[in-house]
Length: 409
Image (cartoon, rainbow, N blue to C red):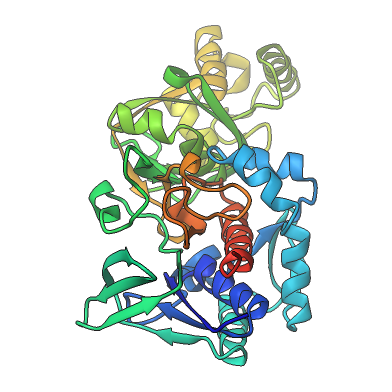
């Protein structure tokens, strides 16, 4: 095959994986990475609290793709080429072993994202991939027989093939320099994976308290998610909240992040079961104070706060608890209601809902349908997953597939 010039624009996980795959598949090509910032793989560095949640230990493609609010059907056939198992093997062949945590998340055994960064940079060096930082792309256009790029530093470059793996932009105008997005081929971006701000929340004083199993509901869009919930200084966070925000990303953007939120702190029990257990405790311990006896394994501080909200004073004992107050407590345990008036970005897992419309992309090669020689991978596509390693897997999968097809005719 004749010599080819490939340029991969990005600097993140999908970019490096695409560049590496292309360099391995087309040894006669020269591969260059262009990153607008002064360093690369920044999101990899901070993800997972600095540990990098590489992927998720789910090796059934049908179950895996169910964790993507957008892009499920698009990603399913691509996983046949490169899935979570392939990701684990890819890193292990390069000396990076992964471990699985109880919730299915997979991290390097070193618990350091630097291990992943070093692996990707090492592969890029081994394959003679040129990595250029502080090289933002201002324009990209096709002039037979090459792609022409004008950089922010004034340089101009030419390429035979270009892979766009720039991540997700928060505003639609930021995509304006990209070819292939004409005629509505851009799905307007909105945030995904964010926390809920509830400034009137009486539980804010409990910041740091978490419940391992709660059910979070948004009645207006009939969506709910069950899992760990964290009370914060500004409202609610934790996996259940973040995952629910992903599924409801567009609906919540449409209502400007003002909506009613409901929390069931005891989703494993129905109301009758809760009532029976409360009554049994009453009968057994009538002289104990309600405030000091947290039931159902709830955190003591949360239990006491819910008692206060139920108008149960600190001196009230179980034997003298009025039925009306007990009913209020049961209602708060199963249906606490809060007014959300905004969101906060979960910086470590920031993800954009939206991007390049998948109908504009060849689903087998990830090449633009309208601009041959232009490929897309990663979060720039309208594909996004919940927390747990699914967004990184999208980067590995689409980067690998695009890179393997970058030089195909």
